[in-house]
Length: 230
Image (tube, rainbow, N blue to C red):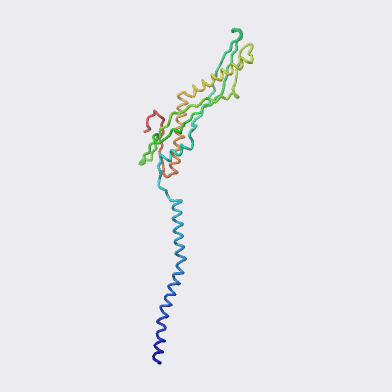
């Protein structure tokens, strides 16, 4: 009997050792769980930051350019300040009473581009050189905007009735509009307006492409009928 009791006492350490090892492993798992969750959260945050702020794949440069045009269907690129000098005559009572009026009427003429006609057929993209070629529609010259509030008049005649004065003023207004429009269409002013239009289009297209990730972009602009820039 004594021998059996001693054998039982020797078996107790054999059961306690695996139990202690199991408890140690469970404690290690519990302590490692917060670190594992922390690593997973850090990984998720890094992935979200990459998606939000990391480099995106470049899209279609022509679509980016067309989006810039859609924001403004008509673009005023240049304005000319003119001062037409015109004169009109009036005759009444079989020519016995004549009057004359000279007028200097300030006028402004705007030069605009109709961007609603811009489509892919008017643009070309060279991915190797990062060059965008743009062909613009003809420049449009607007109707003169006369500032009759600042007009100066010189009238000549022995007697000028109110009716004659109104007739002379209306006639000079029409002449001033016609003269201002003709002056606005001369080669010098048209050349300045075209240059201003090209500069405006280059700036309006280069900046969105740079923001989209295309880097330094060259934008070549020409009008219908002009030769391609070299």
